[in-house]
Amino acid sequence: PTRRSSDLLKMGNPVIGIMDSKGVLMSDNLDALEAFGMILKYQTEASGVIPQISIVVGECMGMGSFVPVLSDFVIMTKTNSTMFMQSPSVMEGMGGKSTTYADMGGSEHASKTGLAHVLADNEEHAFELARELIGFLPENNLEMPVSEPTDDLNRVDVNLNGFLPEDDVTPIDVDYLITSLADNGKFFEIHKNYSTNIKLGFVRFGGMTAGVIANSGTLNTTGVAKAGEFVNICDAFNIPLVTLTDTAGYERKISEELIGIEKYGAKLIFSFANATVPKLNIIIRNAIGNTYMLMNSKHIGADICYAWPSACIALMDKKSQTDLLGTSPQEYDEISSPYNAAGKGYVDSLIVPSNTRKRIIVALQMLMTKRENKSARKHSSVEF
Image (cartoon, rainbow, N blue to C red; front, side, top):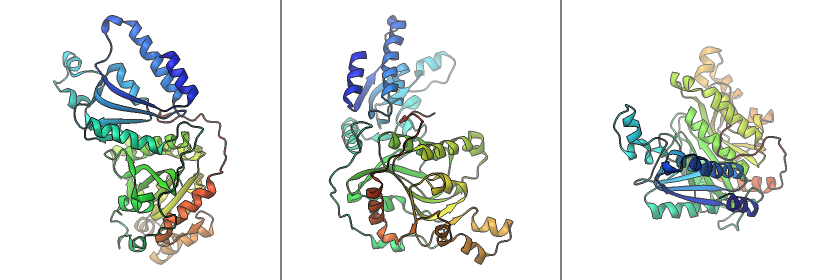
């Protein structure tokens, strides 16, 4: 394992692991720890250097479960795949409740823990998804994933001009928005079933792979955490970041405070501010408070920020500011106007919604030569 892992790092080749193992032989004793320690050590050294994808198609337990978790992406099947640290028999023997392998660590990892990034119908589908995913990624951190464009660079979608709901509360159709902007309408979503208030994944703009992060409504801790992890992966592998912002604040729940929303919000700010890849933000509708700031705003280092003309950019929402500060509705509309933000330099340009795709492509082409050095070491999926 030592020589092979070293060779993979030297060649800059991605790694795809297929997991189906009941773990170690107890008779191996400390030798088992030595073997797994070497594997995990090289995985850690490869983090942010070569893409690592783990496909769990069977049992993955104990020390073996560290391998997929240290990968950049984990693909699990809806049936037959399990991933856990302690088996149901061990839990039951220690006085815990009787449970099954599937209940302990089955496909619900995709929705409850976020340990599974992609959920497949079966093994064949898992391999297809792995091939599709690796097509969006570079061979290593020295390359940039760019291919020949297969869609019209000047394509517009006039439906976007009337896309927003009449009120500012009804969630927007984020799926439609992303696929409308992407080459050939193709969107490879990551963490589709986990914290659905933020959508993220890979698309292409004019042949260039980009990581898209989009939201509509309020943010919560799990959504912010998954966004931070995704930013780190994109930054490690030279993948530009495009955010589609429609945020009206945080979920108003005591549980969010007890989990530590401040911690994960700060991590997302760090990830965006530390990222050296091209960063583009489009404010679609609402951009309220510090949730707008941490969604790749100019304030924390976005290279370019666009806004749709009807966007609302403000420190507080309209009701709160009028109730608490006595601001009149007319004054609020003036303060929160995107034209006001553009006048202060916080927005680079107001764009016609139907032209959003064209403006993204032009901006990314301009930013392709961006060079920026930061002292922090680039990791991919591992949190700091």
